[in-house]
Image 1 (cartoon, rainbow, N blue to C red):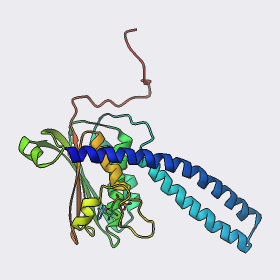
Image 2 (spheres, rainbow, N blue to C red):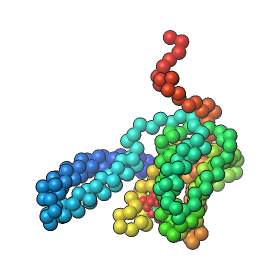
Image 3 (cartoon, helix red, strand yellow):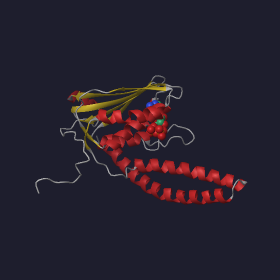
Image 4 (cartoon, helix red, strand yellow):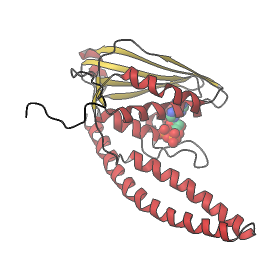
Length: 260
Ligand code: ADP
């Protein structure tokens, strides 16, 4: 439990640091991008303009990376509410299918009548997208990606075997791929911010750190089961809430009180 606490603390201070740096850095990149664009326009098709185009391209890439940093730092306001996991999974289904490409077969296997969990829907989407992107990157030659959900009970014995997990009712989300798998030393470091094995700046090392932050903040756990050459399964457990799922309708403005 102590180790888990320390990891969360470390993630939090790293997040704050990353957020601050990313914000300032993004402003600098905007200046670089602006001036590079001026040169591209003024220089027409000269060699200068071509060089400036390279500068603009690098600045744009830097800007993409800082946006990832900002989302890791979780600057946005989080609004947890009781929600149905399957609704969120179904909503991201199409988006995922498109970003995966045709060489990866996506199977979604949702349980019906899942109990509700307390989470921010945007963040839960982010968890699914990050895990799916990693699965895609692990299957360059194609393969199968399966996302399934279920209601599970964790008894005291199982809880004791998994640090930080309390006995109780959970919704389980599993994201499985038939990709490269991960050797043990990679599994051990996979949740560390900025740890990546992807070459040429293709990874930020923030995907799983973000997943870890979101899931633990929602009171859940995330575990990696992986075997090299066979594939990887990431299991997310989110505690069940008694609160009822309410879909806020347009006729019901937020912050209205009754009985006044
Ligand atoms: P990034 O994707 O930017 O590298 P992540 O934190 O998402 O950062 O992942 C860290 C590392 O964990 C990856 O570089 C990769 O080595 C490994 N990894 C994550 N998910 C998978 C997966 N589904 N299959 C194989 N390796 C994975």
